[in-house]
Image (cartoon, rainbow, N blue to C red; front, side, top):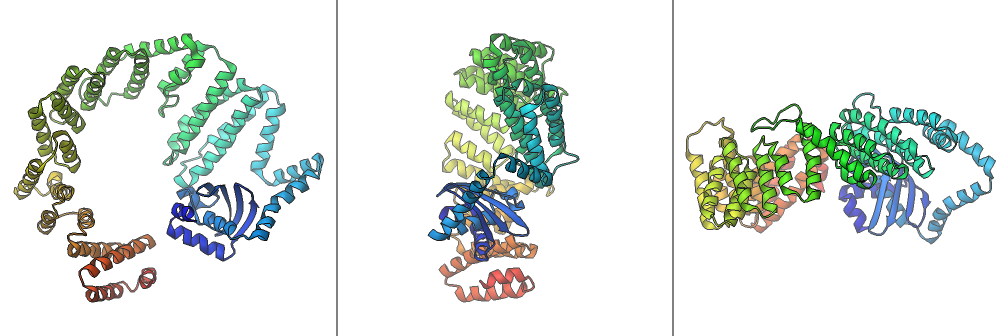
Length: 558
């Protein structure tokens, strides 16, 4: 029960409990590690739970499951099973058993007729049975044609596929991939490679037409890649020709299809295929001229990146660090590119070379430095006993573009301490007192940076003084309030009160629930301050101001 509540969250758990109590769950199957149920919601949803105890997983046909991977219908199903006593449990378990026994007694012909009747009413089942029959009995040409049509139909987006629809689109493709994979098992693996060639071509275009926030499109491509490799292992295609096909896929794909194929397919390619793969990459690489600083937007940057990645993998397998450096030298268009070479040198104990590349990168991009390169160089200076140079370099960057993240990195390199803290605080305070244009983004961020730094150093009195004197964003005030509840409860609760006003005015059930959580925190803080009478008056005033928001008032009364 605790594991279920933890996975669902209190709100969803309570909704599921209400569904169970209202009798909205019909248990279809109850077996040792499988539960299937029909749950009446806005419509009838099919819920399925597998596993047991604390280790379980589920799926549901409702929209909420597609969004959050859990839902009230799964909670209701689990609670309904937990509530079964011995007699009712046995009855639920016997439901599937009775159906199985009945079907076994019907004979093959009766089952065939039953399936065909169902297939006439269910298009998905009809397609499934038709493809299964084709795989079992049709000739290669007919089967290829049929499956190519199935791929085109399944992958086609017919316009943009938004987040809520991607799951259904992906399910259709998964169904077709299962059928293609079955060809390997049935001894027809030779058909898989041309079919997947079509699939990858279709997916290359389709991925630009879907909202793939959950990565389902990428997962389908990975699944197809696994099937492709199985088919290659089974059919053993000519290695040199396979290398050319895989190479073309890797360098031409906008979505990194077949990334790392020379390694993934090494056993199938053999020495001849690997040699051809490398020859193709080296030949294309020679045709590309070197990049120079600030030339990153070159039209063929994607191809350059993929070729460099292929060649570096070969060099790494050979243990040839110098070859890796030569590859990276041809693409020095940003400070980060210099950092990459410097890190590579440092990894292999070449600190002097690493420093050379790092300092050249700092010089090339002194007008627009990369903080990652600066931090790396500072760490290298420290390691080489050049602490003074590290300090100068890091402080110069902090004073150029102060940020809390860089301050933390600088502390890690230089060792921190009160002197460093005091210098940083003094610098930021001095900057705040200088007359600067209010339209400057740097000016606008300084109070926030100072607040965060003071919170990190637990200088809460100074932080609240900054809040009183400067324009600090609500997010930073909230962070300060939460960090300093113990030492500054009176100031913390007033910030929470402002937050409550903002989110209640915005409306929405989630905002109302969050407001009530903060009301409880305010109550605890004011109890410590001995202000419960004043708290009651404040609460009455809050309710009076927002009495028109009925859902908020319901929660408030609880």
